[in-house]
Image 1 (tube, rainbow, N blue to C red):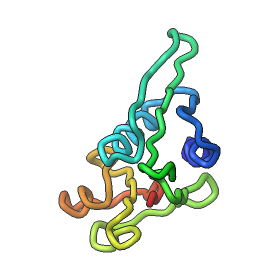
Image 2 (image 1 turned 30 degrees about the vertical axis):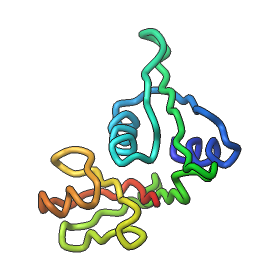
Image 3 (image 1 turned 120 degrees about the vertical axis):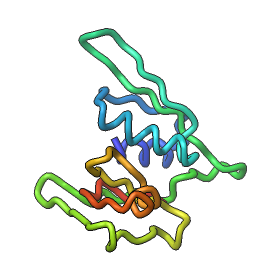
Length: 123
């Protein structure tokens, strides 16, 4: 999903579509709240649900998302305690973390004093 968004912005697409999952929707909700994507819509029927993400661009046509880095992968999971969570791109980016309190950004995880699995970094 993250690479689809990055590639869609690289070719100036208006939106990208991919299969639905609850985890993807939680991540996209955070990206929408932080103004990295314009809007997210759930489409489809019971058997084939899809997510359509409308991409956000700056006034000069540059993508809002400069970079996306997937941290935890299937082969290597990365967990951080609350005290070791740092800011991304000197506060201009965000880190998405799966915690016992749900999917949170790095700022909220530090505020709630919870650690967890680092999903990705976006700047």
